[in-house]
Every structure is written in structure tokens, then in C-alpha cells.
Amino acid sequence: MILRNLLTLAAALVLTAPAAAELRQFEMTIEEVDLEVAPNFTYKVWGFNGQVPGPLLHVKEGDEVEVVVQNNSTLNHTIHWHGTYQTGTWRSDGVPDITQEAIEPGDSYTYRFTADKPGTLWYHCHVNVPEHVGLRGMWGPMIVEPKEPHPLAEKVTKEAILMFSGWNPEVADTYGEGGHPNEPISYFSINGKSFPMTQPLRVKEGDVVRLRLIAATIPVAFHPHGHDALVTHKDGLPVEHPYPVDVLHMAPGERYDVIIEMNNPGRWITHDHYEHHVSNNGKAPGGAVFIIEYEGIEDDDWYVWKDKEADPDFYFSESMEKPFGLHDVDIFKGAYPDTRGRGRGRR
Image (spheres, helix red, strand yellow):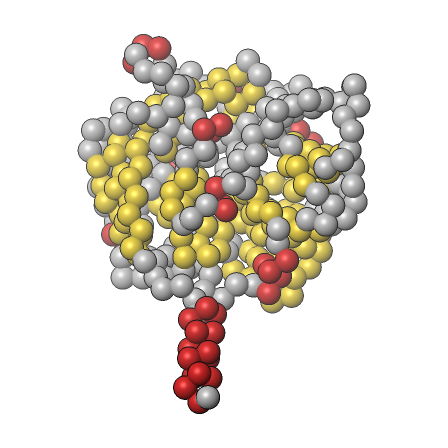
């Protein structure tokens, strides 16, 4: 009897103990591709794996991460793992001329570090940040699952990652230009797309959705209609006292996790409340807008997204359910220019 009880206890401990840290090895490329941001508006970007946002890196707290980055573009780049402490691995912080030499065209660099900070993080280039990050799409999400999940996480039934950015049409066709103070940022996007090219977030009544909000390049005033959002984390770490918001202000680089209980069936616009952020070069509606669509709400003939074939991974929702790893998303892929003789997507 004693032996059986001990075995039962041991089995329970195995089931409840956090998963052991692992070595995660990835390969990423930097590609020069054309990204369709809004209808009739295409932008030359440097895409990690040829996409904007870059691929999702999803690992566990304590994992050892190794990323080999191959620069297939015509200018120098690095990757900074924003939020990662880089304890004992400062040479992987990704800052040119300080922690490393920039990766020249045709060369590669290997980053090695421990995922020592949990939560919603991100990564981006650190060469000529005003252009490469601010205007050329060199950013992507990195989610580090904590060893001790937040109690509210147990309620979550759906994940969504949203990265907010702006674009200057005057430099859309020319690499190496832009990133200057007071330049005309007049297109705004979520995950690299401006409304109506964003996607609905489709939910069921009773869902509990965690939105991981990342202000990649612009300030944001996030506002969901029909619901309050409960702020649970800031910059990856849990807040001491979660609090509800109607409008959530975010500075560039900040991340917030919010939880929304889907308890009000309908169709609800959700948008950046900076007024000019909901336009495409001054034409509204556009910009950083998407719609929460509840299952069972019939499309009206006049609905702007009537019969829209939505991509279920536009908010990385499907990728977050996959095993830990690096996950590309096809809808974010740019197109190689015809002059390079390549097809759509990365090599």
C-alpha cells in the first residue's frame, strides 16, 4: 500500500512539474520582398523568412535558443531579442558595433541565449532602426511560456498576437531611404496589413481570448467595442493587480497582454483610437482596424466583410497551438520582385 501511494505521488509530481528546458535550434533568413500592405499599396521590406511580421518563435522559459541568421539582402542587419535579459550572453543582444559586427550581405550569424524572461517578447533588427524597424518590417513575435503560468491563463481558450506598425508611402519603393523625424507616416497596420486587408477575429460566445498586443513601431490607443479588456501583463511580466480598460495606451516597443471574455454576441470593430491611425493615407475606413465576429451572427448584405474567407492564423492563433518551435505564416509572406526571378514566398 505504501509503495503504491508513493508511486501515485511520483506520477502526480511528474504530471504537474514544469517541462524541462530544451535546446531549440532555428534557422532564419533575411529577404528582400514586396509586401502588399493595403489595396494598391505595396512596400519594399526586409522580411525575416520573407514575411512581415517575421515567424513566431514559441519557446519555454529556461530553454536554450540558438538561431542561425542568414542575410540574403543587400544591406547589413542584426537581430535584437527585445526583452530577453541575455544573462551571460551579451554578444547575442544584436546591437551593431557594440555587441557584434552587423551581418553583411551573404553572411550569417549565430545567436545563442537562454530564454530567461517569460511572456510576450519580440525581436527586431538593430541596424538603422528608424528605417529597418520603423519602415521596413523587420520585426516579429517571440512568446516565452512561463514556468509558472498566470492563474487567469487557465481560462484562456484562444490566443491572438497583434503587432502595430506604420508606413511612409514616399519611400515605399526605395531601400535605404526614410526613417527621418516628421516624415509622413500615413498608412497603419496590424500584422503588416491595413483594413480592409486585416482579418476578422472569429470567436464563440463563452470564449476567453488573450490578445498579446505589441506596439512595434507606433504609439497605439487600443480600443475594443462592446467589451472591456482586462490587462494581465506588461512587457511580458504579470501586473500585480489586473485592471480593466476601455482604451489602452501603448508606447512604441511596449507589450500588453489583455484578456477579453466573449460575452456579448455581435460584430464589433476593434481599432487604434488615434484618429489618423484608422485611415489609409487619409482615406477612412482603413489602417489599424479589425472586427470581432461571433459565431452564429448572420452576415448582412451590406457588411463590409460579407463572405470574407478569413485566414485563421492571421493572429498566430493556430501557430500558438502547435508544438514549441519556429512557425512561418503564409499570409504574411511577401513576393520576390520579378527582376530576381523568384516566386512568391521564401526559398
